[in-house]
Length: 113
Ligand SMILES: [Fe+2]
Image (cartoon, rainbow, N blue to C red):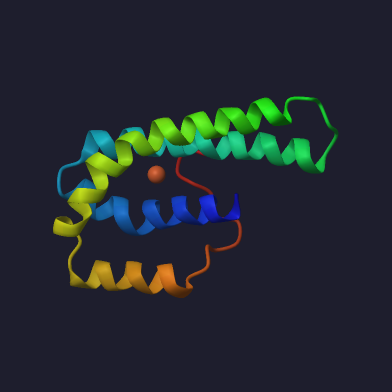
C-alpha cells in the first residue's frame, strides 16, 4: 500500500497537472475522485490490520482490487499515452528523477482523500 500511495502521489503531483493543462480536465477529475476512493479503502484495510479485527479486512482487500482494476482500465489507455506527448523535457526529467529515488512527503494525502 505504501507503493500504491507513492504511485498516486507521483501521478497527482507530476503527471496530472500537465495533462490537465493540456485539456484533459474531465478525465483528471475522474481519476482524482477514484484516487480518493482508493485512498479511503486503503485506510479501512490498515485500520483493520493494525486495529481491532472486524472481519471486514478481506472484503476491503477485494474492494481495493476491484477499484484498482476499474481505475487502471481507464487511466492506462486514456492518460498514459498522452503523457509522452504532453510532458515537456523538464516535467519528464522531474518525473524520472522521482521514480528513481523520490520519497513521498510524510503526511501527504491525495486531493480527494
Ligand atoms: Fe491513478
